[in-house]
Image (cartoon, rainbow, N blue to C red; front, side):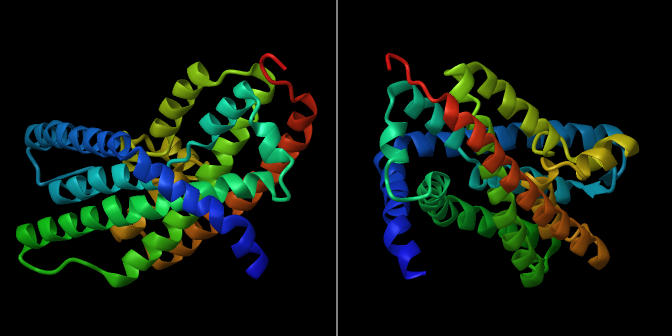
Length: 272
C-alpha cells in the first residue's frame, strides 16, 4: 500500500492540478451539460403533457428530472479521456517516456484520472445531488433522500468508472494501429451515450432491446447507478446489477491487458 502511495499518488495530484489549470474548460463542459439537461427537461415536459397522464413508461415528471440530471452528472463523473491522452502521447512520442518509468502504464493513467474525478465529485457531483434533493423536497413536501440508495449509487458509480476507464483504455490502444482517434472517438462517444441510457432511458426501449442493452457493459457505465439512486430496482435485481458490473469490470480488464500485449509491439510515433 505504501508503495502504491509513493508511486501513483503523484499522478493523482497531477490530475487535480490539470483540472485546476484548465478550469475554464471544465466549467464550460459542466455548463454545457446543464444546458443540455434543461433543454431535455422542456422536451420531456412536452412529452408528458401530450401523453395526458401523470406518468410515462413508469416515470413521473419528477423521476424524469432526477434521471436527466443524474445521468448527465454520472456520465461526467465516470467520463474517461484516457483514449485521447494515449492518442496524443503516441502522436508526439511522449508515451515512450511513460512506458520506461518504473510504474504500470495503465495504472499511471488511472490515478491521473482519479485525481480529476475527485475534483469533479466535490465541485460538481455533490452540489447536483443537493440541488436534486432540494427539488424533490419542494415537489413532494417530504425528504426523499435515501442513504442506502446513495451508498448503492456510489458503489455502482465507482464500478461504472472502472468499466468506462477500461473501455476507453481499450479504445485508446487502437491508436497504436491508426495513429489518430479524433474521428472515430466522436463516433464512439455517441454510440456509448445512446447504449448507456444517457440520451434516452433504457426503460423506454422495446422490451427485447432493453433486456439486451441492460446486459451489455454500456448500461453499467451510467444507467445502472442512476436507477439504483432512484430506487427503481428490487433487492434481488440490485444484487444482479452490481454483480453484472463486477463481471464486466473483470472481463474488460482482461481484454485491455490482451489488447495492450499486442498493441505495444506495434508502437511507432509520428516522425519516429
